Image (tube, rainbow, N blue to C red; front, side, top):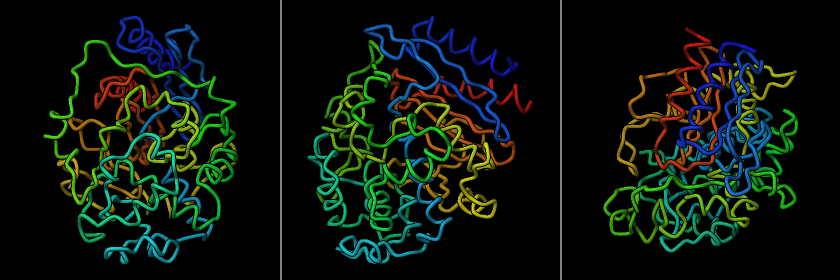
Length: 376
């Protein structure tokens, strides 16, 4: 057992024993080798079913990095290019002056369509055609490519429909055939989860005693504002624990999020960095392209500075983290994260079922242990 494995195991055991977390997975690859595979706690607090390494967790926007990776694998194989106008694949998307939007703009949250109709429900999110039609008919909040603003839910439909139009297949099938299957994690890395596998998933829960986020309070936050009848965060479809436990949500393709084990998504990032058991997802040249800064500036939706590569954020999840220009990945709103560092060859993922909205304390603590134990 490596020193990193021991230290991570102690840390996550303490988090569970203290009540800070219910169940946690941590996986780390270095230079294509799995060096940390640690689990602690319960996958389902009600039954006591334990977390194991293969347990998939609904991990909200950590899935966006998986969605982007599907596009890069298709680009690597010549199926599409980043500068392909979206309307070449999806003519309806050009409505209301969005004709100039490209695949690159979709990946960098700069199409100008960060929202969905304000009345969108979880049931609506499960209706692929309805959501894609709503996105295509949206009036842009800005000219495509001129600004970036977090496309919290619309990202998945825009990128997912690009993939469907380019391949003729739903993005969940492309993920399975082109990424998860070749990496040997087809049962641990999903968009729509097969109904037969729902019983293997972790059950999400909420921390007790947290502040109640009322509609009046949320409406005062820029992220929740409504423009042209659309909002980045429809009130009825916020990704809380109840949302992430719904069978209809879990079994549908909603690729702004994803369901995954830590070791599966860490393996995916490792296969972007280099070869993993004979599988490499992209060339070294493409890796440099997709992890370089593509857009930076104040995010028009959340109001914070952001630095984006092609489908990934640059740097660690916390706003307080030190600059890390060689780190790329995505965090989920519930406190999960997966990322890789091109400088060290390390790929890291942490999944958990306690939904700690916007709180990355656990990721920061465990990530620091990994960084210190592996890279000094």
